[in-house]
Amino acid sequence: MAKYKLKKGIGLFEATLYGIGIILGAGIYALIGVGAGIAGNALWLSFVVGAVIAAFTGFSYAELSSMYPKEAAEYVYTKHAFKKEVLAFIVQWIMFFTVVVSIPTVALGFAGYWSFLFGGNMAIIALALIALMSLLNYFGIKESAKYNDISTIIEVVGLAAIILLGLYYGTKHGTFASMDFFQSPTGFTGILTATTVIYFAFIGFENLVNISEEAKDAKHVIPKALIISLAVSAVIYVLVSIAAVSIVGWENLAGSKAPLAEAAEKVVPNGSAVLALIALFATSNTVLILLIIGSRLLYGLSENKSLPGFFSNVGKRGTPYISILFICALAGLSLFLGGIKKLAHLTDLGIFTVYIFVNLSVIVLRYREPEAKRLFKAPVNIGRFPLLAFLGILLNVGMLYFFELNTFVYGLALLLVGIALYFLFDTNKPNQKTL
Image (cartoon, rainbow, N blue to C red):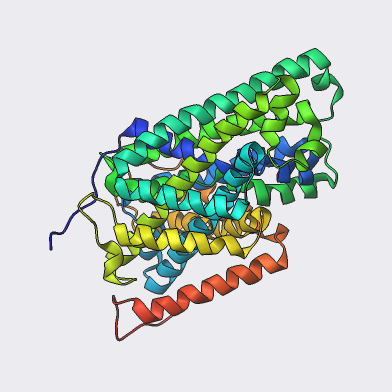
């Protein structure tokens, strides 16, 4: 049987659009209402806090990706830094299930806008989307990239429209002058608590490193694409949140199934239908990219001999078909873990945990491998010590305080499943597996 390899078909433009596409998908379209219900008019400050957390960790990812452009990136980083294979596997496992749980979160966002337009059962709609996007994932990375390029442009146009409508409405009706954009129902605690939900909107930049083996000149392309896509997305989020709150108010956003569509409708007749259609492209595109990332994470863990070898089987279309099918099934089952808010919280808990270890890896490798070639180096250093990575650790640890207890229980259960799989399947050290 022929052994196929992943195709290298992604340049800087495609990689940047991949990053922007996955970042701008579900979070802003589906979760802005949930965030507004917690942070009130100060929702934009939650996005600022999220952007700072993402930026500090983003520089760490950029540096590490310039050193090790590999699939299953978090596994590679932590293994090089700590020389503990079980720790590397656990970190990658957390990232893997973070991606898996994010897929139904986004799919439910898609279903909300679909049912707003056409009606229907949201769970069935979400399942159908996951299956359809998995099929596109199977057809190939270039085909998926084309859909992503088109969808990213459409969703950016939609968000730009909301910003312009907000500017028009706020100027005409004086809401910019009369509204207190620092007002939050529960003060600064509410702003930080909202960040634990809306941070889902920033997830995606770190997943760029997991398509490194399909990128041309990955050591240069991936770090640049990562920083550019994160910066562009952060500015858009802040502007959109200010615009949406100024048009309909945070209370109406909190109670809406299709929050941005409702904002558009208030300014332009039938504007809700147009925004809802754009939201369908945005959320479906994010589901596609998450499915791609999830299947490549499985592929990478299999290539590293931490999971059964059949997950790294690549078909004649140049895609890991067994991993794609497995991710599709897991994402469908994850729909039954809870509603969109619970799934987003579980996703963010996993991502903050992974970020802590990624930032730690940068610090450790600065001392363990000081002479290693770094085509990108995170700025703001004290000697070898990367200050931004250290601040990233503090911020991510601090955010854990604002999660509910049941979210930690779910996370612990998934962690135990990962540890069991490690001892069952990992073949790197068959006779000497120790913690």
